[in-house]
Image 1 (cartoon, one colour):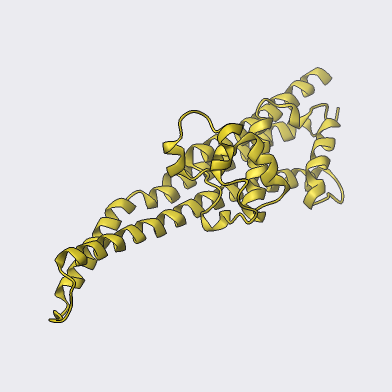
Image 2 (spheres, helix red, strand yellow):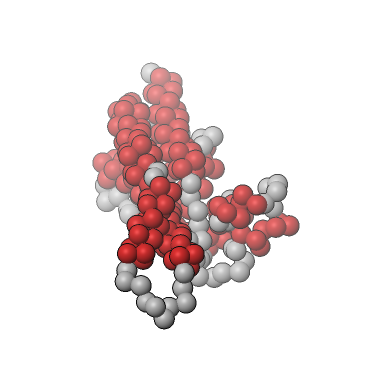
Length: 247
């Protein structure tokens, strides 16, 4: 048993957990609510466009009547709504990437201070696991591991598009690839029988950073925050237990 176990148990619980909680509060209570009024904004945009069109000088040779102008204005509002909705989706996807980056930085913080010449990049995860096993705990034996892994795959898919992570994620969360409008029309779970409807098999060029092809929702982001918080809490409790056993 290594002498720093008690210190890291407290640090993970007090600092890492609080950082994730602050991230969730900012993301879900401040950032995403900024998009809560887009339906009203779209209606206002349509009305403003209609007023603009009807105020233009009339062309006596034009075959368009007021109904045509109303249709154009409605289409303008729909385009506004679609544009802002895509931006909202892109922001949600980026927040998932940000959450995972924060989690990786927390792991790196531990390695930098507990291990000389700590590795970065792809080796971080294995070194993090090996280092904590020297403290007598398995960080990836926690109950929340599957959700934490899901976050990692989602973040990699959002950053890189189609690839190994997207393939793995599609196996466990095919619904993340299904547009919300299609999800509303679907009856039952998205299983192998209707998997192709999500568009996963039809596209090899995913563009999640533009708010397309992968659809993280607020519920997903909250669940992933919960998983990372549980990860640090469970790890903290395991380190404390090892510390007590060593006395």
